[in-house]
Length: 77
Image (cartoon, rainbow, N blue to C red; front, side, top):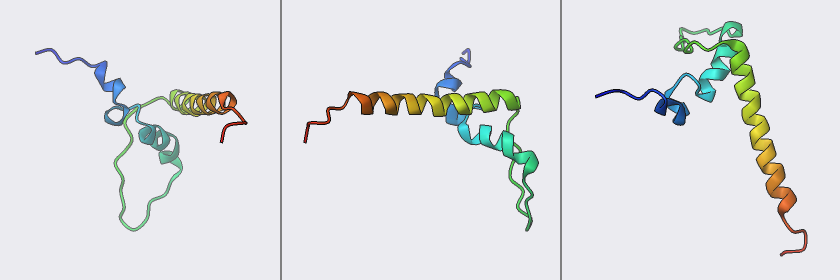
């Protein structure tokens, strides 16, 4: 059976484009872990792509929120 790779992007928690992984790609080089805690290294994603995807996600959520709020009637109770 052939494995279909594009389905992985539809479930971002299972791929390298998971928002948690994108944040770790940006923060991992700047963090210092003490007390023997060693988190797993993030899966490889280019830093500019990580920044773009995170900003696009935030912009998308803000656009949806603005659209929903602007279409609500101020007179309904």
